[in-house]
Amino acid sequence: MADLQATFDAAVANSKNLSERPDNATLLKLYGLYKQGTAGDNTEKKPGFGDMVGRAKWDAWKALKGTSNNDAMQQYIDLIKSLS
Image (cartoon, rainbow, N blue to C red; front, side, top):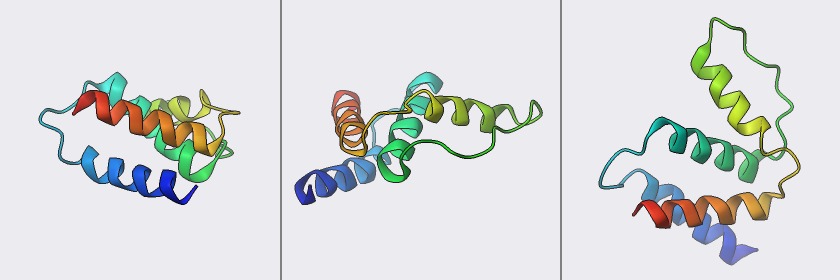
């Protein structure tokens, strides 16, 4: 677990140094995986229609419901590696 956490933390740091900015769908996937890996299942209230960005982020996180923290961290790591 400690190794996975260290690798995840490194991937988070690397995400800020990608050679080019990922598309919005990929950014939402990264956001959802990050939140699922760090906070677990989404239990927050869904943002209203006026907050389109917040709603998209909420949906991306909610789609990962039931994914374990470790699985979400590993998927995040793998996605960052594929973008590097």
